[in-house]
Image (tube, rainbow, N blue to C red; front, side, top):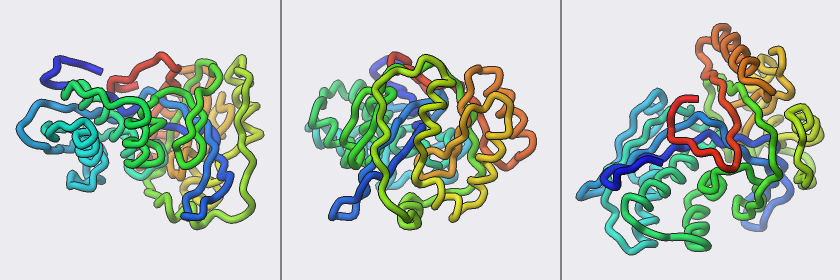
Length: 300
């Protein structure tokens, strides 16, 4: 995060689900999840600047996919924080949108978390602990884990967070085939029994060990997403075919897919080859962030 206090910028890194099990469903219809969430050093950026009113401007490669109205999660985060802190919601917000919209990698949730971080500094507020957790959860199920910004096991409806064991240094190639998937539609299309939780306690010693753990786990939303958008399968096949790809998996409710690699060179080579072959896809490579890493919104 950057200062001076008259303008504060916070990065919104891509949120990736290395596995995602649907373990149950509440009486109110909300699904219960168990997931290993990590973050990649690529994403959006939110800047908050002193102003006499609350405003939001959106630019960047994927700005056209978002409206800046009252329903935007960045605006909603600002209003909720101001209400909780007892301050006036005054800030000129700018969202540099570099991640595809409705793509299963955090997107709006990461942007909302970045807005909360930037505005806490700009406004000098200290909404913390359970109050901040409840505020974040009220914005969306992924906002609390995006606010934490570190490898975590996420359970419940996003309200049950636990620190994940230490993970090895790794890289990913990210591929979005240019289709937007509705999260409710993907959940509705899911069929079959619920899964058991997939959490583990030991720290994998290498990226290969991490991939071995992930092979015994899955993303329960991948099959319904493939059925709704066959391009997801094409993206997964493209990743799996690249040298050095240890595992290919869809993130969240899709349609972004990730390939796990042990080295930067292998991940970047995979992204370059896929990007040349599929010019209409969003393709990039990025390192996975550790618990002490920060992301300011710069390119990977």
